[in-house]
Image (tube, rainbow, N blue to C red; front, side, top):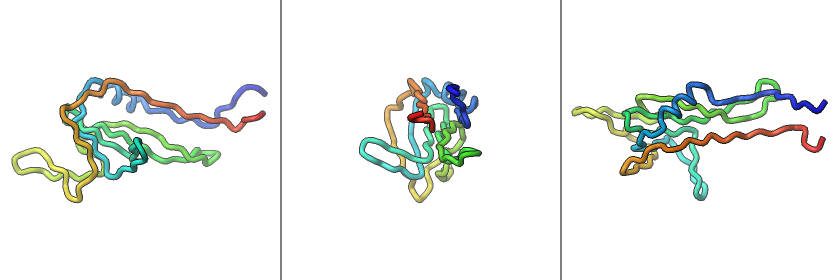
Length: 132
């Protein structure tokens, strides 16, 4: 049989796509993460919290899963909005606002704020029928 059978498929949720679309054109003030891995010019983390101009955080999170039948490992991307950054404590200030609480988490601070101008989501796929 020449028809390719798809055993498992995972895509961005409609809520994740809506969050990405809403964030287009919105300035980013900070990119926060509880831990970073830096390899050459690449920075990776299990999650990033983008502090947006609208006083919310756009949370980009990568979660590890296994396919239900073949038990193949894969990473699923999730994008949500939150009032606070993910896995980073904020301490309230008595005159209003918040400060990142100790221990200080890794963060990148950028001024002036730059808006999100384009979003690209890449796809990875593979097949076990190589050479057939």
